[in-house]
Length: 307
Ligand code: HEM
Image 1 (cartoon, rainbow, N blue to C red):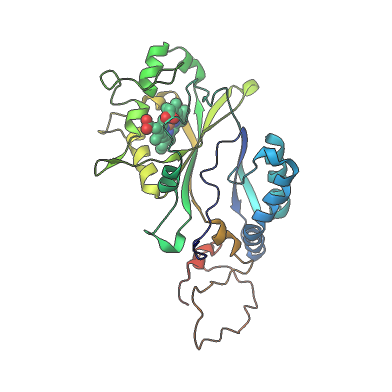
Image 2 (cartoon, rainbow, N blue to C red):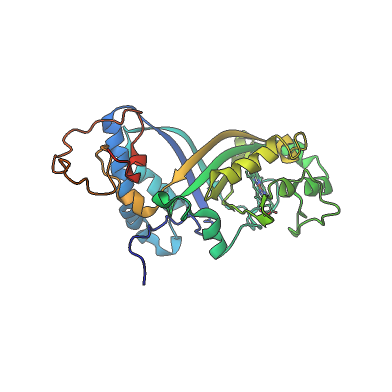
């Protein structure tokens, strides 16, 4: 029998779409902005249903063709107009057989099936946030002239796979500084996977060629360890040569709440208690919409911190 108390996750493990819009925004100061953003949390599922229904084959999802994405982003911005300040907007697209702009197939070693759930969704280790996930995004720009000047074999050693056929290089020839060597994390003899939804983006006329890195994980520690291996090196100094041709111009860690969690966000920023507060003046209406003292949206308080 289904456990009704199990939170429903957002479609973190959904298949890669043909297009995506990455909107990064900061919430403006003030209680009105906070209320608008918190309202959207609960409204998002309905908005997604409304736009997605216009083309059922389009597989619209909101951690996600360009027409549906564009329409959804427009609707979201219309609701948030004065509440947020856009920081970055990137339109990603699928490039041939899921290749990045460096020309390599990107996403091959992603987990599939149940392994996606195991890799990405928070479980019993943090029950209050079960069904949630963490996502790290980084916008990378590539030096295409430098990269294209390398012989294919040198590019293959940097990635650790063959370019045309996407076959992993043999351990005897794959350098320890290859991208696909430094990003393998093992704990107790077991590989800890993440889910990557990288997408190419760019503007040919501007000479901009990039990869929008998106990595989902049930703990941010895994991706942070990968980043440390790439940038600092494993051991230190033995860094990822992909970085000689790619630089990260943004980087953020976000918490991805479960769909159930999102729907429970109320416009009122008062902390919610998980359990009814016996003998407390619970009937007291939460009259005023007061901002959280720490300036946050107060969404974390849905965890049910006792007042
Ligand atoms: C410039 C940005 C990046 C590009 C172009 C890129 C590209 C690639 C390519 C082509 C592969 C090999 C095929 C595959 O298994 O998907 C790969 C593997 C992988 N990448 Fe990246 N990547 C980038 C950044 C990152 C970052 C920032 C991380 C993590 C912090 C990461 C984690 C991984 C992992 C875990 C694998 C699979 C390794 C394996 O199991 O063999 N990548 N990447």
